[in-house]
Length: 210
Length: 113
Image 1 (cartoon, one colour):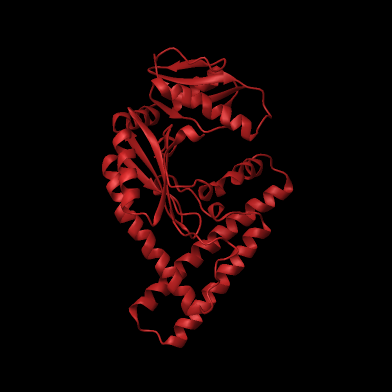
Image 2 (tube, rainbow over the protein chains, first blue to last red):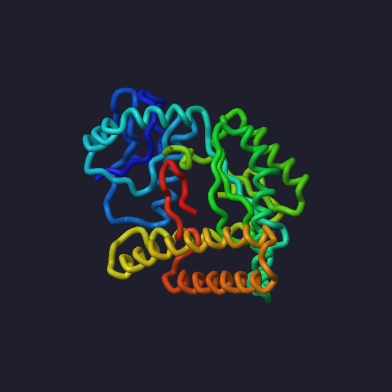
């Protein structure tokens, strides 16, 4: 059994020393994989997977493969890549030279679950919903739109809690990362009523499939 | 992990709510014991219900915005949706599902909700 970590260009730079990795080539693409014992699924194993993908990301372009993608052997990996060769080649071109940055935005004075007031009337409930919708639209306009200009591609996910206004991912050219983070810091200082969290650089998980 | 933080507001704690989700999601997505299968079905059904609830709520907000409803009608609408919201939360808790779980990735179309 082998575990897949990433699809990269072939040939590429030497593989990083983070385990018994092997690059299995199909034309000018390679599937980076390692032998695995099945059964072991845990948050620790997930982080190990992420470490490998991030080590690969340091010096090459790649399509990250989701944790838990396992195949019988290396010839199965060759077949899997060959079957989707065109799609994978196009996807790799799309993320070439770029990394993923993630942004989350919360309102600054987030009420905790205990202190949050239940709306007393139906009308109040609807007003709160409208207000939340307006705040989210505003966050998109004042944060997401300017940041998207610096990104090659961007996408939004639905906020996960009432105090979350924005959850977005950006595909940013490696040389642009610094100015992107600079813009995040400027936007934060202009909007002290919001809390911005920007993380990365991540493998382009959100942009690998389209 | 902290070396991945490029910019953060004063305190990070408020963003940490996601961490317990990971272990949860992992244990849920692996293994197909009967309880998991049941929860998977509940997840699918609740996703459809949540989609309808959100569509109706948006429609209601538009009608309230248009100003054509009487105060009493607005109050009744609001109360209905408030109750629905609460009931959905109870059902989610019962099946151990997060808001995020009631969504479907539609590939090129993005997410359902």
